[in-house]
Length: 104
Image (cartoon, rainbow, N blue to C red; front, side, top):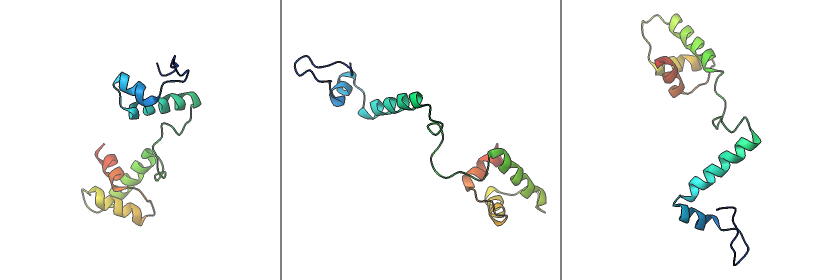
């Protein structure tokens, strides 16, 4: 229907009227268009999250977390203290990422 042309004006139907007939929000139509465009382009960045890269892969960071825990004189360390010790070693990463990797 979105590719159909109006018989009276010989123009394609507008997105607002098509989404109203289909009872879909326009944001859903735009999201479907973006997914279809990304699938055609096969862009590797389409499936990646936005923002700066983290400190290496999760596997590398887990090894660094284990090294911090191994070097610690205490039995258990929380994610905040582990994150601080990683920053002290020059590894910049988010506290949520340290928490996620420590609990998994």
